[in-house]
Image (cartoon, rainbow, N blue to C red):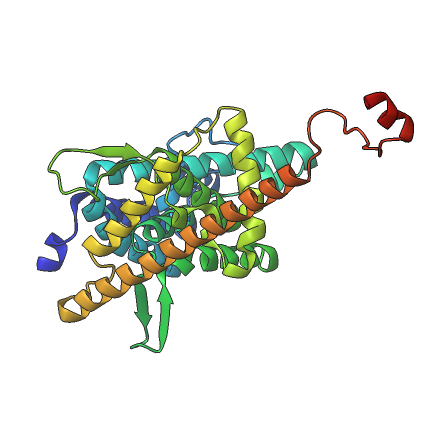
Length: 357
């Protein structure tokens, strides 16, 4: 009884939706033998098909909670249970509800547009009738949120045999779904994983209202987005590929700023974002897997130390880049010609000396 009470209300509702729509889909898929045509229409109530989605718009929501088999139901349930408990307690029910709606509706809608576009190009009917369902986009969105809140938290699996930091989960998740989509043909999962990841990161990076954790004041100070350097797009990937990813991401970001789609971050915004990231590590948040006691206190201190080390590394890189730019500008100014033509100096002749005397 206590286990059920400990689940926050919205997370409990999401688990109920998962159970209702997944069971309904399985019953209609495997047990409806009276009228196959009617059964197909009833299945469209639970899942999303680009060709029929305009006639059943609610499927943009329900498709996320309609899983295909027992394994995916178990994975989705664990994701919603642990992820939902954590995020709902960290953000509150209202902000968590906004996040769930975005992570559910936007990926399903964008995925359906992608398949409609591919159908318009190829005229392949299978692309228009593809079934889009499952919580893959929600899983990717949760991992991005964990990367923001507890990037240096270490998850221990198999009694300590495997230890993985939370900040590595999004890239591993995307790589696994990309390889699965290419090799096994699970292309809908590939699309949902990437769109869910991008939707969550865009919302948390530029739009979500964040509480001010770096001040001791009791006021309701809030600011929009997360400009911290450790939450930049390039920091989701291994160190070896961060420079080219950063160059591409910066180019796209600058283009969006020029088109006034995005508002550029100021130096003050970046500094405040770094302070918030450090405050989250030092202040602590609800744990992911209910670790407690002295060990939890030690983990919080380790996470805070790692956050500070990463922030100092990012600051050092910025200072080195700024120093290199200043040095280049100084060298260019020293090598540039002075204003006006330079006259050649010739020694005085004998006639000039006589005229002067």
